[in-house]
Length: 304
Image (cartoon, rainbow, N blue to C red; front, side, top):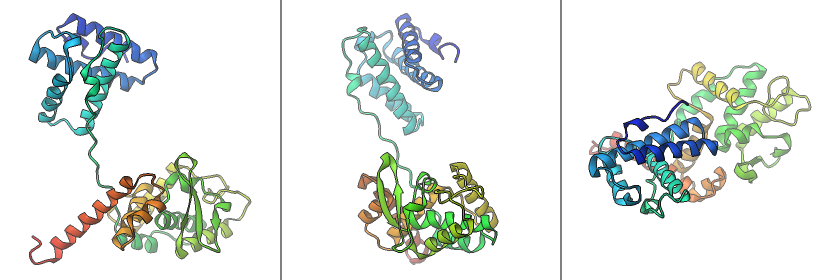
């Protein structure tokens, strides 16, 4: 990245010099070009706002009140919460740098809490769409049977794509129908896979043969990649004609939402998904409530 973005637009010489110092520092500690550009731009925006409202205010005098006014101004311009989060992060890093360099002694800006991100509801494929795809997306070739086993396994277990890719033969217990999944932080959990998915996986392994310890592989026995799994799902969508966007994580979202739709306790779903925090799982209860609201509006005489 060449130069410092928009630094010349600052009227105050001290601001320009300190932004240049900050930019150089970020490069020394090997921050990415994008991070340097974003942080510098966000700090320049903030300091230009300071100049427009308070003139050439000393850096030591800029505090949380000015930052809050700036965030309110940005919000009024329609800046999204994710961008506001990044702005606060960049500005706080800038003032942390000033403190470490003993340019200022302290700043109340460090006490400003970063705005929380908006929690977007996860995309979910309906039960009907998944059932249709299971019946219409896969043929009778060896690869088709493998792909059907992958699709059925993702939906039956709620596994992350990394957990599916890392699955080994020894992780499957066909007698009990339980599967050992290795999740984030090398944490292990056991989940049921259901009769349908278990049968499809067993059939695939028997037909493939070979001595590869990996469960889901190419015909040559090499472990599949994330991209290959995505391509398998995309081809299944195209073949079925279902109007849906689907990824491995959509299957995980759908697994959790459909479990809750049918009355599963949220803590059970938390355990099955391998979530450390219950609050992570509870977002799916919002999806379920939203679905109930839509159904009510659709079918009740007073819904609309």
